[in-house]
Length: 359
Ligand SMILES: Nc1ncnc2c1ncn2[C@@H]1O[C@H](COP(=O)(O)OP(=O)(O)OP(=O)(O)O)[C@@H](O)[C@H]1O
Image 1 (cartoon, rainbow, N blue to C red):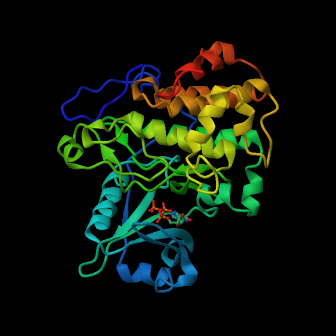
Image 2 (cartoon, rainbow, N blue to C red; image 1 turned 45 degrees about the horizontal axis):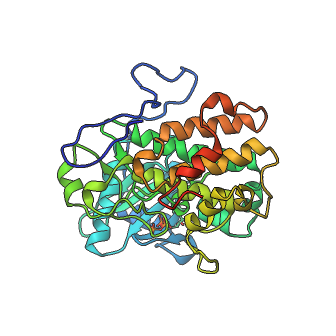
């Protein structure tokens, strides 16, 4: 199983299970996976009035890069959008421009897409992105809202995990590949039909064409999701995102936060993997909805997450494989076909998870 390392000058090794866009075009009836966006340029004053002067009542949330506001575009039949307004630090403004740079080149139903921007002189730049009425997956999982109820079945949770996996796979299969570097539940947003979309491309890096940037960009990401193997700039690889996705999958499975100091161990990986190794995989499932009834689904869903968070990045799967497994899981909620997928024996896998001694 190959993977892409972002080490400067390294060759691109491609996942064997990755679909090739040249040999396997999507069927004509399906929406295009990815196209180049047509962006609209807005006047700053129009976005200011669309957000009621960046009113606190329009505030959707704050992140480390700035604030996000709900806006009504009077010029587009009162369309709802989200306006991202950066904070003033130089580092943040670099992330802001990076997000524009990445999202202005790609568009997919799997992403929170860029719709437009404002770049008036003497005013701060603004990004206009799709409005996601159900907020972040983090909020959906960790709050007691009605939307939490909407993802309280295993078929829905696996579907959400698959949608995120497909979004990351889409980034990794670009030429040149894009590494997101900040996969986490707060960066997955839920649309009106509770479909999961990947957002926040502020830390994303395009490999190879940006070798100089890869070399000079120190490791970054979010504590709790960060690959322990990504310790220096040249250790960046697509497997960095695979690790973060594995943490996110454990979060979806267990309903626990990536780091939760109310528990010991507080890190979700240190909590879940020993349990899987001891053959107590049922213990990692969200007690709010109980473990999947189907033993095959119960074993393999946790196993997919465990494979993604392996300490040795070479042993982690590529996102193409993860998509294949989760696709199989969505089907095997109804029919058992795990043996055909060749994921292997869960017990064998447990022996090789992480760097801890084999039990
Ligand atoms: N397109 C959107 N539609 C609706 N709500 C959004 C949208 N984008 C962001 N939000 C809301 O705003 C909050 C802050 O988003 P933002 O991307 O600024 O930060 P974050 O991802 O939560 O944190 P950080 O930037 O520190 O990683 C999100 O948690 C979400 O609730």
